[in-house]
Amino acid sequence: MNISVFGTGYVGLVAGACLADVGHQVTCMDINAERIARLEAGEVPIYEPGLTELVTQNVAAGRLHFTTDTAKAVKESELIFIAVGTPPDEDGSADLRHVLAVAHSIGEHMDDYKLVIDKSTVPVGTAEKVQAAIAGALSVRDVSLDFDVCSNPEFMKEGAAIEDFTRGARIVVGTDSEHVETRMRACYAPYNRNHDKLMFMSVRAAELTKYAANAMLATKISFMNEMANLAERLDVDVEEVRRGIGSDPRIGYHFIYPGCGYGGSCFPKDVQALERTAREHGYHPALLSAVEQVNHQQKQTLFAKLQSALGDVSGKTIAVWGLAFKPNTDDMREAPSRELMEALWATGAKVQAYDPEAMAECRRLYGDRHDLILTFDRIQAIKGADALVICTEWKAFRSVDFAWLAGELSEKLVIDGRNLYDVEDMTAAGLRYVGVGRNNLRSTLPA
Ligand SMILES: NC(=O)c1ccc[n+]([C@@H]2O[C@H](COP(=O)([O-])OP(=O)(O)OC[C@H]3O[C@@H](n4cnc5c(N)ncnc54)[C@H](O)[C@@H]3O)[C@@H](O)[C@H]2O)c1
Image 1 (cartoon, rainbow, N blue to C red):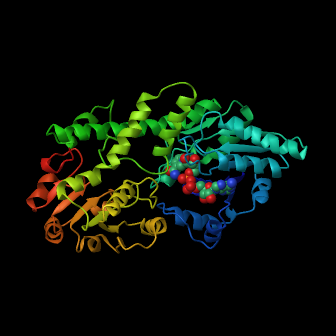
Image 2 (image 1 turned 180 degrees about the vertical axis):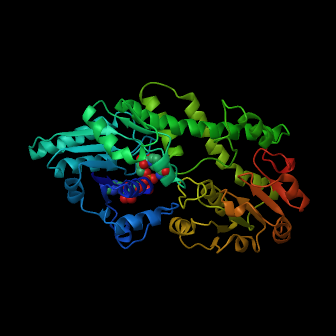
Image 3 (image 1 turned 90 degrees about the vertical axis):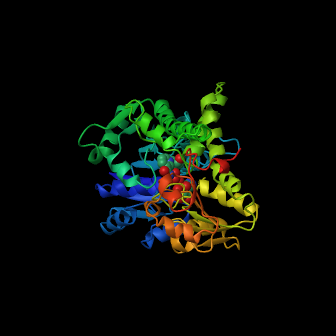
């Protein structure tokens, strides 16, 4: 099939490369000319495991193309995926500007039937707005052409996006048209061979399903963080509680790791947007508001714990391991590390940071500043530091010589936002170790 994908971010580029890999002819379009130039030069502008190889192979095979030419991307394809960003508006609702701009340009340039597929995460009712935007542009041209709009939300997670796209649990499609169902079945057939993963439902149900999924996962995280905060005050190790509840199949082990709060480009904005949708429809979403509030507080605990343990952090040098919002990505959107670093800088502390993939992104976000030193490896980040804070659970941080660490850090303090280490091993090495929900250092807990 001839497919165009608008937006070459984490979702669009992965979807485009995966669809090309199973034989479709795919054109990836972006308005960001620099991004397209880099892709055309064989450089993948984001870090996602396996993506560079997949893009390279499919470009070489002549199945994957890049362009900034909207008309070309519209005219060449029957299926058009919209995978552009939907950032939060000032009031928390999803900003549909980019989605509707794509819809408008489809109406401006199409000259035969198109199936337009909303893959961006968009509020209930957006497919109708996309439909209206295309129809509006067609009526300005005074032409009448057939088209359909369906919803096909994306459930991939950064760091495992290719695996999720190719072997995900389900492919949700919102449509009430048999023709659309047939075309979507054909599009996804190569990824739908072992059992039927395609779930057809109403457009509005598909739109809400995406938000419900993210809100549910965010709820699990905030719930566990609330339990961790309680455990700290009750002299309980929350890791024991996690194992205790995770063993119940009704609860399960997924997404119940206590930590320093969720970040990324999805959970924070999607919970906010769903909350906003609820309010617009006269419903007070008490649970969603609490999920967001707990997460906001949780992101501040790293700094609060550091301050409790050190008294005054001004003038200190703090090593930070992990900048990305989670492992296996370079994405720092809404990352807990950012809240920590910004709080440290505001008090006059210096940061020495290391992340296996997000160094360039950190430099792009914060530029050159005297109180940020980005080091070549995790060891250099520790040299001359007073304390260490772990923000991201990269595998590379899991194994550490604790005695060496105790020898290097002048305050012998480790604040672990991801509970990577054993409390007893750390204390045996002479370190002051503060995890999440593990009250081994009561005096350092914020009041
Ligand atoms: N990142 C994720 O893990 C993930 C997972 C599931 C769903 N989503 C959703 O998918 C959507 C895209 O997310 P992302 O993380 O890939 O975004 P992103 O910010 O990484 O990329 C968006 C891209 O769209 C491009 N763009 C903007 N306007 C355009 C236009 N008019 N025409 C063509 N390109 C345009 C931008 O230049 C950018 O390259 C969002 O709605 C997001 O919520 C994201």
